[in-house]
Length: 531
Ligand code: NG1
Ligand code: ZN
Image (cartoon, rainbow, N blue to C red; front, side, top):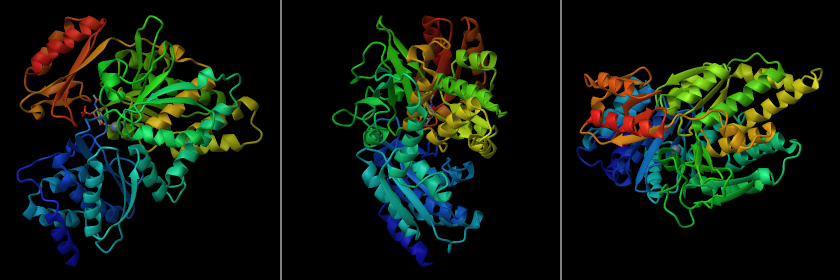
């Protein structure tokens, strides 16, 4: 077939290094950018097939998120803006690892297994982050799309969640919004201004927010958005791509893992600051107190703030909707305790990786999901959205109910429900703080984190470690879990687990305990047990 001839010819321009094996992991393929040209071409092919199969637009994002500038990666976005399904992750791995002369056979095999009608049109949206390698890699991707006859729209430099948003808008015929960057800015900023404009006594001081853009795409996009936000926020943007290196000593991952302020931000004691990651799908907040102590407000604190706010509004609105918070094993024990025992909301724990959290959150009327690292969003079921909408439009409802319904309606519009979004989450947090009249210190005081430590351990083969119970326990190698259990018993209020990373060639160790010293010791002891 002529179609495959073109694939054959073009794939020769994107040859696979013999013997190289990569895996579609927690967040797609991710490795040193020099190893990814063939992967990009092949993901262009796969996205085209996925589009034919689903008869919808598919997204492909070129990014390595919080990883260093030298790395890159690629992830596929399904029609509703969600991560691609696991079966297709398997196909992605098979295609990426096929040696050059076996590529067509693997491609044809996927077509056959999925019974794909090759006459069906295909449409692929492409976006990229600010890495130097992203330009050429996204060209390889487009080559793949075009060589299988797919059509493409290249959004160029966009954040990961912006691309997810575009895909969802396109496939819902505009019901979710307009599939343009301008449409995204307008929808979010209108909702934000509606939420905050009627807050009485909101002073200019309360609008001040310092943002660390991680020298990445989020910084560029936020500066584009500022005019849409009018004077709703007074943003000071740092690490804005003008000089520093992407994710280097800055960004959400650095701040969360190091538990310290990023370089390059002129922090003032008591002022709210936040950090994005390299593709702006994560956010964490922090401040320093008058004694110079650093306070981190991570994904768990964000989930708590948002779920508390939503629960209060549901009560005020008199709406009987079930709300749940979805976390991973990395959630601080204090947050889980607070949510379950004080807030009385349902808490679920899933494996690491947003696709797992997203899936679990879909089971509730309102599902708030956040990884501790600040990656998360809120999902509203169709029923929930309809009930909120009806109440907001109902002229006979009393004032308090109506006010709550309007707040809920604008909150729905402010949230990017397709995936965690640093810009949308930031605006939501700012709106919640404004509506509730809270400072960052009030928010921080909702509960106190248990001291914790995260470490990375290099091992010969990280896949030798297999886990169960949402990654909280290991089943292999034999004896490891027993060793961890013994170590945990030596500390108070302690918890520890290990799991192989899906994005780096390391094993991650997590420990928490009643003191920082104890958490540090436990993490260290457990990492020795992993070797
Ligand atoms: P891995 O490398 O599988 O731990 C990391 C994060 C995830 C998720 C992905 C994708 C931690 C402990 N892990 O996954 O939560 O965000 O990257 O970016 O933060
Ligand atoms: Zn990211």
